[in-house]
Every structure is written in structure tokens, then in C-alpha cells.
Image (cartoon, rainbow, N blue to C red; front, side, top):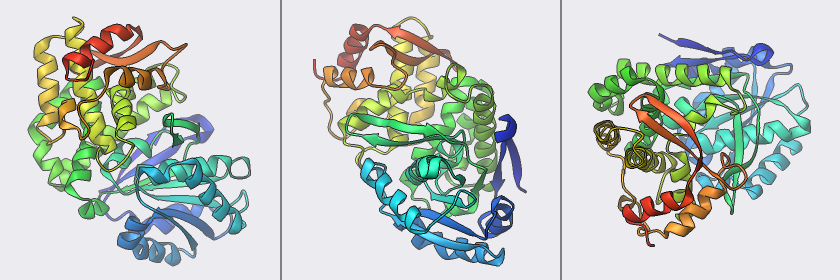
Length: 370
């Protein structure tokens, strides 16, 4: 059964479809958004080798001509060089503003293709077909598109909403276990930041979700998307409540920067550590009970995710360097640190002007070099 979840943004509203077999019906879902029967499909080498023929066949059945734009896998592709390459290849296809870009892959492909679509001839429509759990529950929904720079993650980008998101759960059967766990970090995030009942459901059903048991996986993905859609509709450009979706990300992005945005630390793994650090910091600051903090950390750890900095390759990290990365975070204002912290399980809030010295002391206590 396919779940249809609306993202209410007025004349830019769209649906997220969650279910099995959506890839095989992709053509009929995408066709209404095309003025001509062609689309550029941005994908990476791994996803295209696994699922490219299936998508091409689905598009062909609907009379849609697919033009593959294949990029190397990995976070390093989400760069100025990667953006220039994709943009040039879209121009070579002579797409016009009535054509469509299809982002077919994980978060890297979605971010890169979405940003390229946002700036191509001042904006062209695109569709998201996310192929990882992380992308299905997070990066494909909400219109954030960006690339990384040497100074930080996702610092150059645009808000550009897709026309449609097709989250086909069947493609997750080929997802490696490590990637599945990394995606689960973004699932449990929704429970930790705003839905204690969902967190408690995940405590009981994490193993079923990670084992890709159909009913558990459908509920986990659909509930995550519902929460994100609600928040995005309320605060599209992250001026208020949407910042809650960055629970754990200030710590996470600093660790990703220190590990070079590479395979040593996947984004979801970094978010797992980051959420654990956010709950422990909240407890240390007297904002959250130690019991809730421990329970939240345990929920992350039970999924096989790292929850301490010494679980991350490259440890020990330098506390001053980590704080410096945090000062470059998109949520920082005037050099002041902004974190998403917690008062309880399911009750996160935006904490502005957090004392950098307190963060540094906390990091040192957590094992960073003074």
C-alpha cells in the first residue's frame, strides 16, 4: 500500500509517496510534470548499476526519454567541481526550462542534482527518487539543496522544492547494513526531537526496521516524512521550528569536517554521535534529566550507531578545532554558537548564544584534546 504524504507549501506543494514498487511506476508518476517527454537522470555509479535499467524501463513505458548523468559516489562529489560538471552536462543536453531533472540516488545525489536544478537557467523543476533510508526520511523532503566547501558542509546552496518525491522501499533491499544504520539515525531523530511516542515505538521496533520488515519499515519512513513535512510546511526556510531538524548536526558537521567528509564517518553515523553529544551536553547543562539523556543515547547505540567521539576514526580530536567548525555552522549568528538541545525525550529546542567555553570544556570531558 502506498502512503501519500502532502508537503503543504501553497502553489509549490507536492506529495511524498512511500511504498513498494514505486520505481516501476515512476514514469506514470513523473509524466504529468513533463512538457516534453524527456528528463535528465542524475545518479551515481553505484545506484545506476543496481537500479538504472529498472528506472529507464519504467520511464520508457511512459514514453519518457531518460538521459543519464552519472557521477562518482561519495560525499566528495558534492563540491564546486561536481556542481560544475553536472551543470555543464545538463547544458550539453540542451534542456530547457520546461524539462525536468530527476535525482536518483542518496543524499549526495539529491543535494547536488537539486542545487544544479535550482541554478540551471535560473531554475528548472526536479523530482526526487531517493534510494537510501537517510535520503527517504530526510534529505529528499523539504527543498534544501547544497554542496560542501573546504570551510564546511552544505554552506553553498539554495531552497528548491521538488515537484514529487518517490520513496520506494524496495530499493532498500540492496542498501548495505552500514548505510541502513546511518539512515536509522535520521529516523530516531524525529522521535528524539518531537515525538516521544514514536521514540518509544522505535525502542521496541528498531530491529524490525533495520531488518527491513515491511510494515515496520513503512511506518518508520512514513512517520518520519510526516513529521518533516509538517515542520517544512510551517517553516520552509529554517527561520524557526525547522532548525529542530538539525538535532545533533552541529556536533556532527564538526566531526565530519575533521574526518574529511569521507567514508570513515558517514553522515548518519556523525548524526548519531552528534545526537548523543547533544543529549549529554543538555544533561550536563541541567536542561534535561540524566535518565532521559541516557535513554536517548541508548536508543541510538542499540541501532549499532556510534555515540562517543572515541568511536570515530581519527579520535582524539582537537577541541578548539571542533569549536571553530561549529562557529561556521549555518545556524550560527554573528559568530555565536547555536545548538539544538533537549529538555526531555521528544522535546528539543533551539538554544542560541551557547557559551563556546562551556562547549569546549564539555568536548574535553568527552575525550577531545584540550
